[in-house]
Image 1 (cartoon, one colour):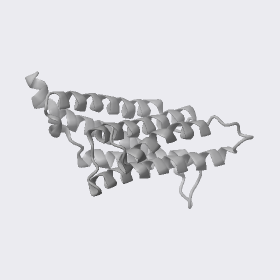
Image 2 (tube, one colour):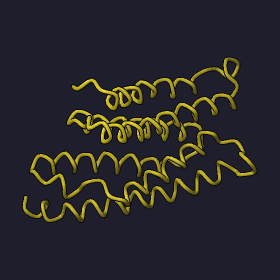
Image 3 (cartoon, rainbow, N blue to C red):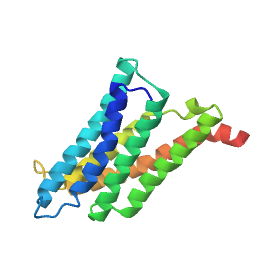
Length: 188
């Protein structure tokens, strides 16, 4: 495992997950509910920024590695799954939507792993559709975590809307990746 800045940022993102989750298990006397939301949103935002930064630095500093390429999406999926599970527990997100998003991530990860084993990983590389889905998903999660009105915007309502849109994009992108993999799937 190469020890470089991008990989350290990915490890930081993984280490932030238990911190993020633990915030919601603190008593309301220890940390008021609004402060829990603010702190958790800040931790999630930091994690999202490290996701962008580690990819940027890996390319800019020419520090890409097979280990980093493996660990980065794992860290992303763990953070998103943790956020979705917390939001479902708090009643801020629908369990079906969380299942769609988490299920797609598991299915596409398995598909990518299988495609890599058969030497066809380039046919299901990350697409612009996947990046758009991720953007909507991250915005939705940030709004739902914050939960309070912000600058006259109802974060819960807007977050729910964006999460439903992210779920639709999730299904669409899964269909896209499956279509890209179909020639290889038919060979096997």
